[in-house]
Length: 140
Image (cartoon, one colour):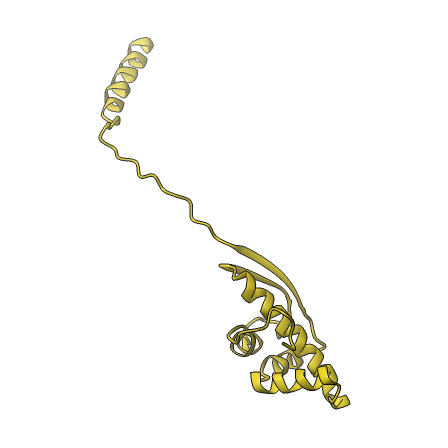
């Protein structure tokens, strides 16, 4: 009796599966899409989040004035560190602009501890990434 039930189950299963074969199925040949993914260790670690926000909020015209004064040696002592930070940020932005990744993971980018305050990121986008940077260095 057990072999009859097993045989019957096998026959019913085989009969049901014969309808699953569909020769009319059309397969679409999907071409791979190239995606450029990049990771960048920014080293934008600052003593405080506010210091980073302040550097990212520097408008392009003020950046240019700081960099020009730094390069020609006429910069005031109190502005020298800020100019060096601006040059660093502009050089990073130039590299990102040159490589133009589709996906970018930015490491060592300070936040206020919860990641809710996006002022530094928005300033980086507005004042550095959205402004054409020279690939020959920050002073060019």
